Length: 154
Image (cartoon, rainbow, N blue to C red; front, side):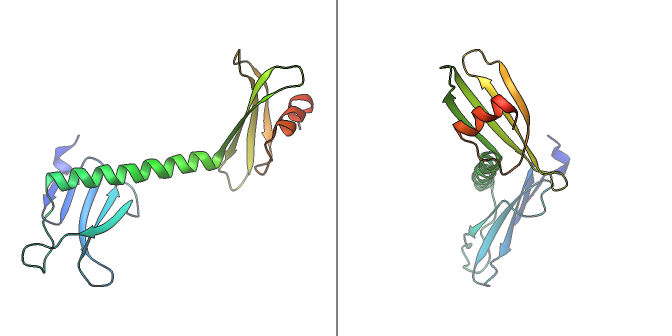
């Protein structure tokens, strides 16, 4: 960790990959804290911040508050990443005509120039890939479509 890049001021803390900045609320009433990950253009977390004892200025940031904010912002990032993975990946398990248990995985590529997805059908018991190929990103993944893909490649 580069400690030369660390900042520990009352309204600005930077440590590791996170920066906490206390700012006036958009509505002009009170204070907010914005947590931004290094390299990000927008904050990952913006929430209310406590007033100081004078009821005018914000309470200064400290190590405990910063650690709590990092934990909250990291959790939000983890949830966003999980949601993105879920949006781009589908998987079903089914029994093929011959009684074989198969798993079909559809992974959608985020590519504006060449929209597509990759469908892979795998034997669940052995892990052997039975067929893999490119399909439309709007491919409807069902047991029937996966079996047709396995037979015809379409």
